[in-house]
Image 1 (cartoon, rainbow, N blue to C red):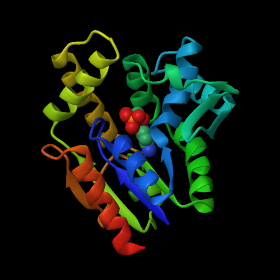
Image 2 (cartoon, rainbow, N blue to C red):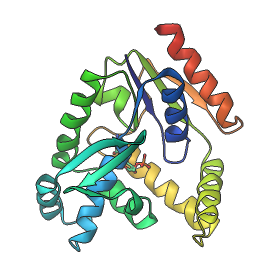
Image 3 (cartoon, rainbow, N blue to C red):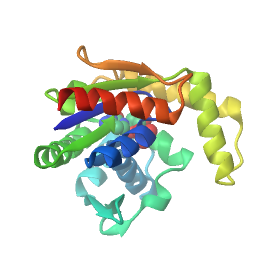
Length: 219
Ligand code: DC
């Protein structure tokens, strides 16, 4: 059973996918974390997002592995656990830019399809229902207003003790949405057969319930 959850940044995909996977005994795959790991590799090399050749070379050379430790997805970059470094705003911006490159996407596409072929999974990202797993049994397009998504990110960062400005986060999200939706390869869009859930006025449990109901209906 393959479940695809796509949608813009901050819509709650990972929170919901994680909870639904736990409830159903499926494996949760966060594909954004894979792209983030490659972005971190580029930042560490001192590259600018615009240097396509060099970015693609580094991404191809980097060893990215996804493993599970204590039930959590852990990203390994050349063997190092980088989970603690891939959630910064700098990495988010770099990720959104380098994920537009064909060679970068091809590297991860193979890895994602391989994992999905062997397991019952819930995979979240931008192009899972449209491109990575077009035959997924359940496809969800999870969205929310820009204001709601920015406020959620602001609360997350503040809770982590990171100082931030709501207006800047909102601008950042709008820019990322634009890049993710308008890139040439595998842009973010709703698959024709996806169920749309707008989480702007729903809490986490309500959305999780709706997603698990949809999955159970098709099992
Ligand atoms: O889901 P996230 O915010 O961690 O994703 C970070 C970036 O990675 C996002 O701006 C676009 C890119 N991404 C992608 O292009 N395709 C995916 N399947 C997942 C993420």
